Image (cartoon, rainbow over all chains, first blue to last red):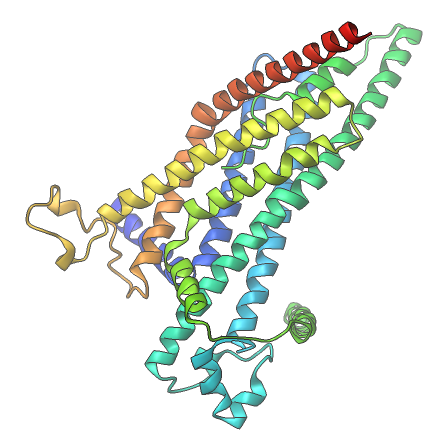
Length: 215
Length: 194
């Protein structure tokens, strides 16, 4: 495949996937952003010569776990908000006045309002153009608001709470393990795999050069 | 076959949960013209740069306080952690908004329909570079924003190292120095009072 046709394919995929769904684009690019920024954090640790190999053993899984929490909570929460708002609009439960009047005019359509499988634009034939236009601008607006609320909730409330909880639990268990190791090493005087000290572990956990930066 | 059956039952269960949530959600009919116009404006104009800005502003209002109230770590760690969070948010939001906005503007400049290309424009041959040739677009505006955002993310993988990380470090050090200065001042004041 030539570079030109690859470029054309890329443009077509973007147009088909996101050309009519701004909320979906915000979620997908948000997830890609989190994935890339997490990869960058892991790479920063991997290529940092100042961090001893033994400490990398702790920091890399820690960074990957952080990334897992960030990405999962962002996707799940934001997608839930977007999906629910989208169903409410598609099923006519939330609608602008013109669309409501159009639905109420037919008892058959009125009975379907609020049903999960009902999709106004797909299931109703011959929707007048002006109604379809009103519906589309209402749908896009609700979509963007729902996605934004979902991402604010996940990125700024749920994720920091979860991350702090995991980080402090990990710090506690890490320190306990290190103390245990140093005691065993002292008593046996046998050289085992060198673990980071409590101070370096704490310092690296809380003062990493670029931990969890959101792209 | 078995996978199909599992998929069907998962989908039925998900639909049933969604239906229950939908039944509990109050219905809404929007008739206020100002609200409808605002929704239309949001759908058309608000995209990833504005979304990133909203995320940044609300992050400043919530995340430092979450860090400061984390009783599982000592006070010093809490303060440094909150300072670093503020620095990270400022650096990330500034670059995130600027690069997204810039990329969408750049894509817009090279995604012009024939009637939009004016005779006095430079690089006329390139003005249709990003117009997709194999698909009928429902909204050119949304397509341009999506493409600009995707390209900005690729750029931000690099700027994350080159701008965000050093800027975060610089701001964190500034904030931590300020915190330490304040703590010292408090200590001096206490000693004077004693």
